[in-house]
Length: 67
Image (cartoon, rainbow, N blue to C red; front, side, top):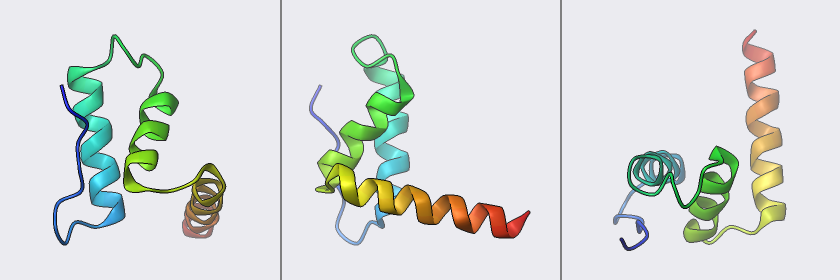
């Protein structure tokens, strides 16, 4: 099955969520680890691993502020 592609006007988070959900549903046997599915989706978005680390760190800080 082809990899998901971002739809016109779709947000980064919207695409990543949709992509992971699709891979979880249709490709779980090929990509058993959620982290692996996430890495694939971030790669499809066009993000490098370094950019993803920065994004994940910012999300973690935001969650910590909320609690």
